[in-house]
Length: 341
Image 1 (cartoon, one colour):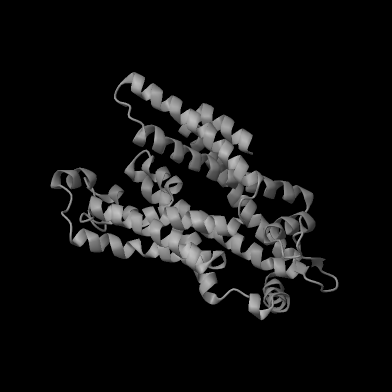
Image 2: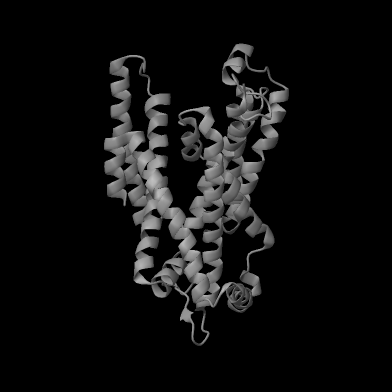
């Protein structure tokens, strides 16, 4: 997966990502919907599957090990609202060809997110129907060498043991598509941030553009290799690593993004304050609360800058009127851009 992603990313750039993301999105949408339908059928239907899930959850998980409602809510909040601040997500809207497409893109994105989100949460929950610790007639839960439950292997084991081979191939394509889409977007954003924003070259000249493109390709290769080693040696369990990265990145960017879209009063100092507060809060809480509560730490880190940004904006000088007029040109509060006269 890493090899294929590296090839089309380095050679094709953003256009290759846009085309492959479109195809991968169709695969993910169809595969996620079919996956839920098949698991419901294997579980005995909608009502029976949900009933078994609730019943077996109580039997499988000791009370002391059950996540609290706060932990579950934090995980849902982090994965739902955290995407608002991920650069690899928002950059797709920055590259949109015209404002008339924004509403359609938002509608498609919402439907896609609902289907993928429901599929992800339900598949994890439905695993209680097909697994049991020592219950007769149920498959044993995957365990680590030390005897603990290997949570990262539950869903892969579920899919390989309870899905038809043809559907399993589709789900494999779904997983690869999601992984390749995320990896390519992350690598492109990371490499362009260094090559364009930090590298001192003049983009208005041909030589400057050539140097930036060459550096982006080189950095893309470097980040691809780094991602391989993170995957190969399993530096951290997935949910903890995701919580840390989402908390830091979304905590840094979500509030400046959202307030910057809808408010003319947000200042540069407020954006920096929001960025620093999100990173600081996530880093501190990750060590204070521990890995088990990392979704809660990430949720707090995402929420805190939404207080910091407007507060700092109220006490700092607003942006220049010329900049605001150019940024909000053609936009009327509460009106869709494509409906403006």
